[in-house]
Image: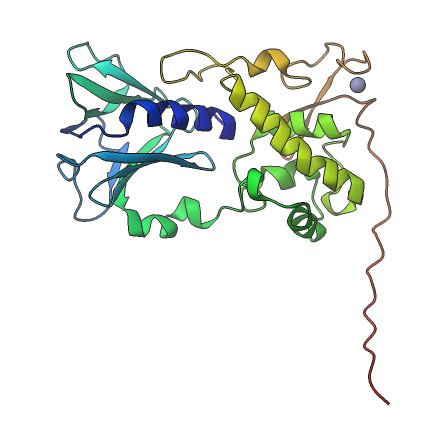
Length: 289
Ligand SMILES: [Zn+2]
């Protein structure tokens, strides 16, 4: 399932090929996948040009000159690519957007959890997915992260998967980030030490930046725009490596269900530390006599 780095890679690749392109017809082969907002339809984009491609969390946002945006959720198995229009559309190709010079942008999704939306740009902030998102990991300061963790009594793994705490992280990258900082995935979120929160904040940015630089992780279905896989999976320290030696200490990587997800960690580098809750700071109100 693509997470933030994979979607960012696709956004950058799309930007290269789409910006400046004038849209033609939209062909919809499965009505559930294409969801235009009221009054808009598959003809609304025709003749408008793409002026930008952005990403928010795991959502791709294509901006068009008519103040319309196309949103694409890849979800589990969604994939975008540019193809000559004359080429036969493979099975499960649900939406195609005609471009110039006999090409089209195609969206294929065998499991059909993915969605292509069309809406006025001004409605984007009210989108049910966007409304619930916390800040992007790149915009999250150490203080903000500390505040967000302070009220959380669940596991750090579950907390970082919660998109309202921080947007865009999924199972792979949370495991990789926690190994980098030596924090057990079942550690209670509000019992991390200040130095661990600082380390966590930098590790998020480092791991995601490294993953984006090598095209993301290709586990099962993910492919970039030109159908090329990413290679960050070769650098994974824990994810998908249960039973293999930890790259740091040589102990076998363990796998256990945490927050309902198969979670990989090193039992030696990421010890679960039983900590008492930190005492609340008492606030003294100094009055004047
Ligand atoms: Zn280790």
